[in-house]
Length: 379
Image (cartoon, rainbow, N blue to C red; front, side):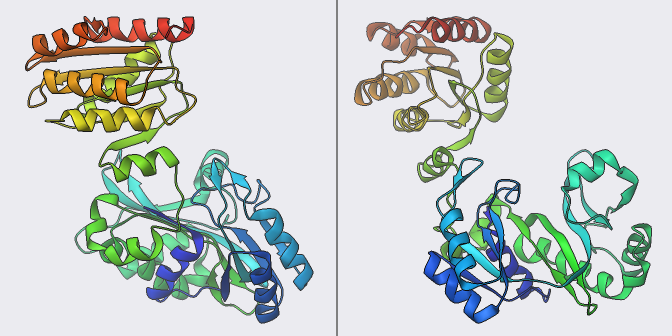
């Protein structure tokens, strides 16, 4: 679950990290009222993606009229596929320095990594590419967390020794987001040092592990309805499906993450572009298959669908019934290729044949077939 900036800052505040005064505004009038309360403000689009500034989603306002106008321009705009539902009006800071601070999971090292850089305000990926030595890194012990001397060394390695005391304290607070909130990623960029010497979170990103949300029902209830994510992923989650949107035009359904990922590779190798990853899991019933197809067909970019199923506890006849039911109920006219093997595969193939669907022989042949059909525009 990726939190919006104002939500992430509320979490940071609960950890004892200083944040600027701010007000959520859902319309231009509320933005104007925020200026009246706070004075000069930054009006910020609230979407769970980066690049807001480049997209015109962050504007400074030095009057009520400017705050109102900024909100009018930002609310409703599209930023990387996300419609902006509201803005966060935050008191402007008197900035002296900008620092980058964050942690994430380094999957290669199989450990959490803390990163600190004096080059704040820039995308950390850009800093890593242009000046990798400018990023100080620390892999804390996962059982005890980072110790003060380790954090002090991290701060000095980043060339920020003059801020050692406040930064060590702040990093320890931020790191609490892992045990307290099951955070996968947290980022403060920029971490602002004001001309008065205050250290304040100028921006914030926070992602909480979806698999741990059962421990954070309060956050899901408080913030879940506000965050408008990818519409297909949101709908899939409602239906209990594991689904990730991609940028292609061939819908993919499989049972098991490995088979799904292998199917994506097969389609790519055959010259196609997958539109999604959709895992229906083991033992999937006909209803689950129908739900998966329904979500995929919501996407107007999809020109065809490939279903690749290996039957262990997933029965081929159940999958076939779901495919036929979904096709009929959804009035599906797009090309459809189904490859299945394993438990009750013969029964499943017979059901498909009786209903005018020719099953694929192998994963590779099925991938080539769906690419061929989508290119030809066959229905």
